[in-house]
Image 1: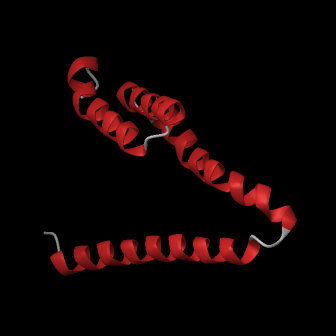
Image 2: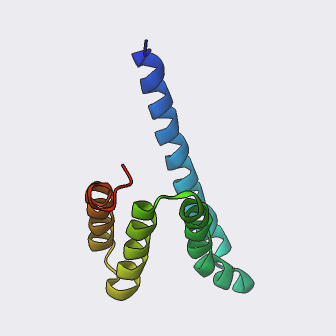
Length: 103
């Protein structure tokens, strides 16, 4: 049986930790931007964080997941539009298993 209060507590804690990591990163970035040698690192860091998530997912992903990820990366590179890339990736994930037979 699922304990709903524990589930809600876990979701709230995850949201809180994500908020702290994002806000903390923002405030640390504001403090470090004055250091001249830190600017290239701060500009590169989001790409490194993205690749840290992307690489294991591609290695363990199904054909549909890899295809969706490739389209998201391609659309982000070509259009620089997060909404279009994300929606396209979600559509591929939703419809891909039906057509590629991964489900």
